[in-house]
Amino acid sequence: MDNRLNIGSEVRELKLGSTFTNAAAPSNQFHTIKYDFKPASVDVNKPAVLEISANKQVTVTVPHLDGSGVPNTVFKGNQRDYSRKDCVLILNRATGEITLEQLNSSIVVKKTRIENKAPNPPPSLPTIKVENNTARQSSKTKITTGVRKNAPISFMPKHS
Image (cartoon, rainbow, N blue to C red; front, side, top):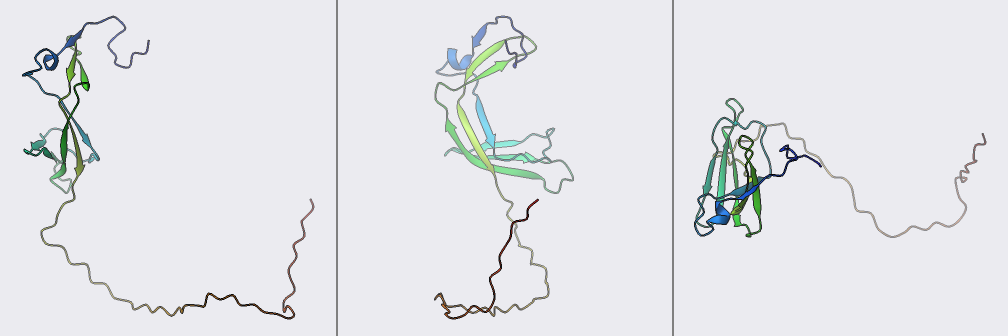
């Protein structure tokens, strides 16, 4: 048997979590977050900030490493409720316990661009004036009659 979960091949008990057993008022909620981009300079030792507004608009602010040039990356998106069929499997490696919980919502966010307060003026470069001297040519086909001035070129195959 394929052991991708690295939990052994023995039969284990699957517990249904509080989202199943106490569906009216579960003690836990589980959500997924999907980012479109992960900066390489994220500081995993600092907490990120997750804000959800009343209209389910989401803002995630992720801190960067000191000296990376920017203090953080801001992601914006929205939150959608999952159906009751979507679940997450939680493996506790310390106890060997396996718990199934229902997912509450999916959050999809995209990186926002940094807005400059005062735009930097473009560097002054010498300007070069380019003139377009091309004229539109007629689309009529020109037909010439008479003797051909240049002899046609013929290609001979090379025999090896």
